[in-house]
Image (cartoon, rainbow, N blue to C red; front, side, top):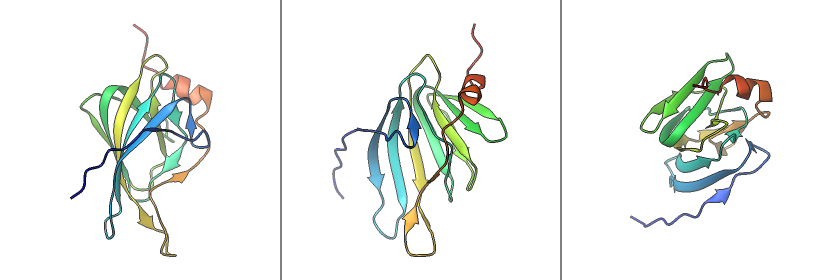
Length: 139
């Protein structure tokens, strides 16, 4: 057993839009391939499109998180909700345009056949019109 006192880091602009802080909470030791991170999004921030070969679970801890898929489906998840992204499902996630959001990102890395493992394959940024269409209706 070990105590983990992680420090948040700014997520790279190559895979995120806006300000996103990521705090790694766990990285499994072999044979485990599990990783868990607390991801905090400022208003308007989001991931780029990406896919997890073994899927991903997002457990919302604060605010309202948006999770979108290529077919145009958008889930608006609130604190306490979990969203399961199936293996190989292209998706993005982040905050609404006017509020903060945070979630735990839980996934496993897959062996790519060469002995290397990766939990995610990154794609292009989410287009502004796609992100705008995902916003909750104004009251």
